[in-house]
Image (cartoon, rainbow, N blue to C red; front, top):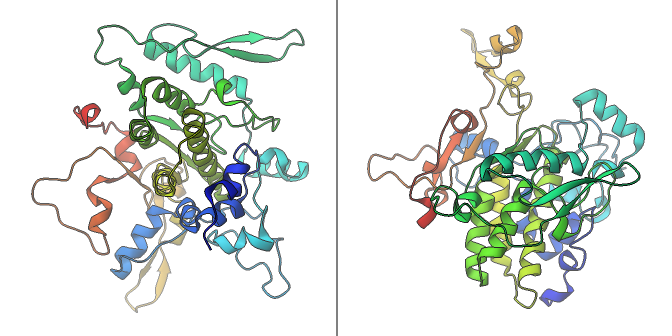
Length: 387
């Protein structure tokens, strides 16, 4: 029996800091499935099997969950190399994944030592994001101005009036701002992209006070659109041009969930009496799963994938390949699986495009490129604003 949309916990708990994977699953399993997928490894699996139905999820990439033992399963499903499967984080396994600030203090220390995991206070994120906008707009304090409180803590006061854009500059319109590429490297829970809460204190941040790069884009979308259809169109473009990567699978899922909930929050704030269709949420989850991906940021490959490359010798024996780049400590030339991302604005070639083994023609495979391609100057098309 279908539940009325108002009874779904995903909407009732939309401002919760600790997002419940069970709430997402109860609303629509396909949303959680999309938030868990690894498009790079899925493409590899499909090419190897020539099967469009193959998919692979992001993996834990941390030993922290190996103590999650079940009497009948041991720690199966929680090991470092295991994919994060829905059944391991919902039901009796719900709340396994939680934000860093809610984790055990010793675990926080261990993760800092192991992967240099240190999260940034929101006021620092805001100050740095303000510098980006100061350079783009050519003026200071566009979205807020920073303050130091009497107790010495830092904060900010949001700009109340509508954001104004440089008059007469066709390269500085609100549409251009929304479609500017933004990337958070080693994003953790993505505090530079969306600021639902301060990742160092766990304190919730009201929508009007948010300072993430994507928060700012969505504010602009809200100020310059008037109906749900127009808002959804430009919100999708904002998400298509917002990127991030992360090593550890739990952090990556938290980041993806934060972007998903942010989308719902801004829509409901703009159109409180309008239904947000399930298809729109599924669609945004799909964009998020492409634009926030699992990667070793130094080598620009799937984490640990250089250590998992094999070849056959003259006797047909499977032997491990040596990665010279890993051995020499260089940043390029690694033999691991290069990470795929997506250029959502790239049009299908008019002629000559050939599908690769396992590719689904419905997924616009011509838009897929390696991260290195984006890093080294791949730009969107000039006519995208009018698309």
